[in-house]
Length: 203
Length: 203
DNA sequence: GTGTTTCCTTGATGTAGGTTAAGATATTAT
DNA sequence: ATAATATCTTAACCTACATCAAGGAAACAC
Image (cartoon, rainbow over all chains, first blue to last red):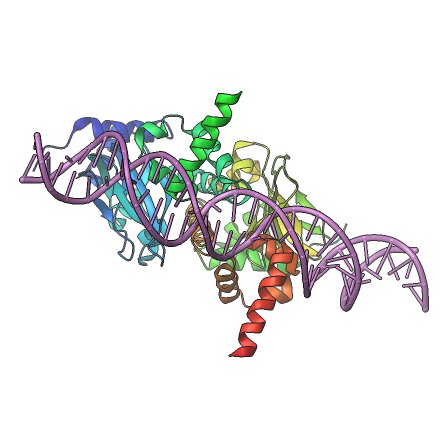
């Protein structure tokens, strides 16, 4: 049992304080409600078919959330870096089997909460209700944008959109997982990058 | 100026009462906060590039929410029928130009609220904060499912998924808009349906 | 260091769905 | 009723990306 890193809780409290006012008592309640959880590279918080029992705040490290279809192909829904949240709301709140796998891309540190603790926390710190409503709205907004880009732009335009929004992604995530995020095969991304490079050499 | 249909408000109150407890005073506050708005077939609540000033509850009729890409192609994000909500949260809360068009598919009746009235309503009826957090979560869940189906299944499987989830859709929405929802062209849907019919004839 | 995965690249070929064009049917407006 | 408009169908051809196959380069394990 390791002593939880103080800075993980500091990041979480900081996240909330940017979005609402908290008393010292509120902060203590928050700290008591979230438990630290470390995952090694490639470890899963939960896998598709299981119930998502925890909502997690990424204190350090990074994650990918992905779905494996019936042909065995992986589809990355999103990557989660520091100060993002990981989980599956449908599964967390409705206790349905999740469609997602949540995997650490490197040794990572989460602060997790289960549904019982979360409902208690909402009761004790009602202002978090608004914070999470807004967080969910933001999440929805991002997903809606992602959906519209996915259905309206070709793979190269989607790649450019990703690079603009997340310029360091290629240093953080292996290329075949970027392909999976873009909705193409690694072979296609490799070919596409070659084409782009060739075009840029000619310019 | 027509007298607002009582049953529109009844449907809205019923919607909220299924999700939380309301006092008579709460119900009066809700009724005073939402304004009736009628749209004729093909009329828009707002169009892409405009700010979404109203969140609307569909009391009667139906809508489609769609995005027009830079090639002029329309992409239906979702259809909204009775007891659903229409709007664009990103635009409504952040006052950004919306990426969406919201269009009535038939003469329809909405109950709409603007951001100021909504914030006031949250203050006066705090239990609605939870209702809308849960509504947003549900919305997110549905969109996530839609995204995963879109990226992992081919057009025919997406069509079957739609028909299973919404068996009367073909009576309610013209075929070219179903194609747009599926992310294919009307010609492709027509061809696909012919193939399916041929296959079924042979079985 | 050497074997073993994992990851990336390249080429040949296949295919779902896009594109273009045209005609056929419905629906709506006057 | 008739014209105008919106919707649906069909067919020939095209393209972005998938599939299959194979080899090379890193990273990791012992």
